[in-house]
Image (cartoon, rainbow, N blue to C red; front, side):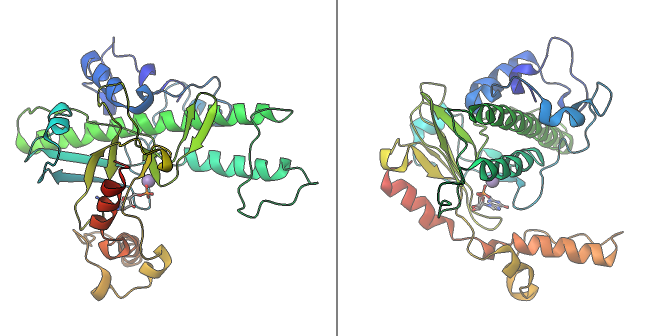
Length: 320
Ligand SMILES: Nc1nc2c(ncn2[C@@H]2O[C@H](COP(=O)(O)O)[C@@H](O)[C@H]2O)c(=O)[nH]1
Ligand SMILES: [Mn+2]
């Protein structure tokens, strides 16, 4: 949590989920992960119990799991390449199998968000009218500046946790493919980004929610890769950031929801439940199976907007 990718010590062979991670692979991961996969932190106060709870060596059962909601690990096949030069540079070819992982910091980011939203509300000057948009600021200067410093620290801890967790899942997915295929194959990371994050630029902060950076970079990619997942039933896209100033160098990171989770839970499965695989009922209690099916209903393709119009909007506007 303190150091993200840069905190991993590959001089000694790693054990557990990250077994087999060599210094060379780690170097490539750092190069291809936004911010080097390491957000600056100075203290672990909010997560001390979590870190020390295991008596020095944390064996956390949450590590290697995707979390709830619409998080997923998905195998995809590259069917169409529109920008051959960029695809070549990023090591993507027609027929390449991609593993797309959408997962955040599990519990950590939510905890940080709840704590600081409460605090921002509490310290808001009582002499001022409450903000109509319901967004309360954490001041960067003045007598409350310490809170924003502490917030950036714990947000960094949560993000570092998410980066390592996605690295674990990447390794688990590759190991599973190796086992099924019974042989080695070439693989590399294209891009990893902690999304719904605060991004700093020369002392200013931009919070992107439902959006990701889509500017130019002087790093490996030449422009931020913009991942636009569709749903379980449609295509997804990977695009190159277009640095559109009106969009604050950002682009949406998904087609977005069409129908709310509550509406989908109550929908008739015969109409709505078009998921890739049903819940395997073997050995499951009936009430648990029903709950899992409702969770799947929330994420059925019908609950998402069609991805093509989203893709065209991003492309035609120049966002990416
Ligand atoms: N390829 C898949 N895309 C999916 C799936 N479930 C949701 N989605 C898309 O991802 C974004 C994620 O947005 P976020 O704001 O929640 O981070 C969402 O807008 C959908 O378009 C899926 O199973 N596979
Ligand atoms: Mn998300």
